[in-house]
Image 1 (cartoon, rainbow, N blue to C red):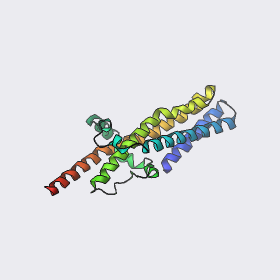
Image 2 (cartoon, rainbow, N blue to C red):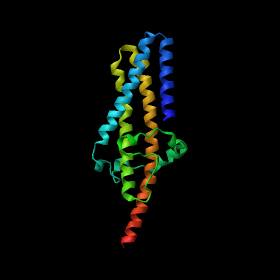
Image 3 (cartoon, rainbow, N blue to C red):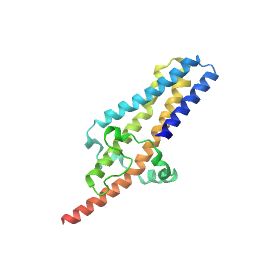
Image 4 (tube, helix red, strand yellow):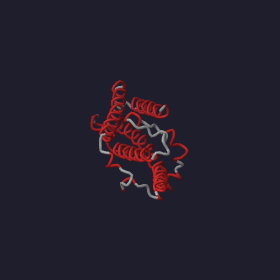
Length: 190
């Protein structure tokens, strides 16, 4: 969380400093506009997360093809070394009632299934946040929408891509765990 807040704070400072240095607008307007755009990003992302969290779990089920991770995608995550940095990504799922920071019940198939569903909800939330973050540009006039709101939206895009990659990286491992648990369960019944 400290890393994300640091990135946001540093980005806000740089965006403000550059705009003040180039005289885009009065210094107080620049600072207020950057704070406004950043607050809008948090509001848009939070509202989106809230709405998606209210959607039925069955729309995000473990067998939903929309959330399958291909082998090419897995290979990309290996090249990006997601495993090395994924734990530094800000995880706010706990605010919605299900933290995805750690697998707390690795031998419970229902829990793993719920974990996959929550990952799928998170993926949709972050993916929809990519374009929605740029709506803040509509709230500022003229050049300020390009010099203030666009950079803030770009930082938001970057900070939403990272959790998407982490969630997509983890999902195949969760599917493997679930498959193993279900196989074990069916062997015990037989």
